[in-house]
Length: 109
Image 1: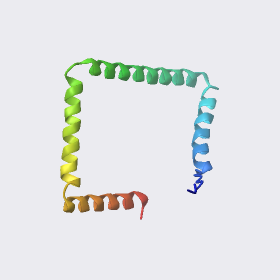
Image 2: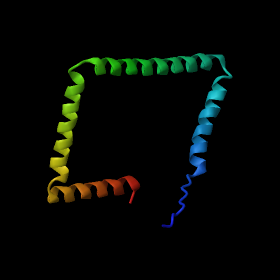
Image 3: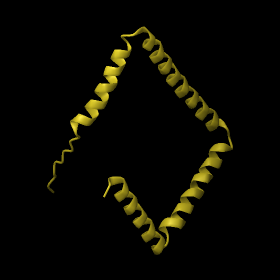
Image 4: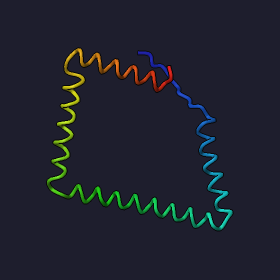
């Protein structure tokens, strides 16, 4: 068996430009006293929101009925999707056409 080496390279200008502008903004914000407090407040709020969301997920997961209920909802939605879009050939063709048209609209073709 022959193996083929494939290398994918991303465009350098888009990611570097966006990350560079963010870094420049943060560095320039630390030069003024008012922006330091704003950045610290935003950082603290982000950490507090993340912590609160993790605690909420933990509390919901500990309730004995809700995880089973959410799992049953997930199974029902999966079966509904399969029945409505994948089970019968006309529905499957309509679903694939919908995907192709959506992809062409997103890509601008």
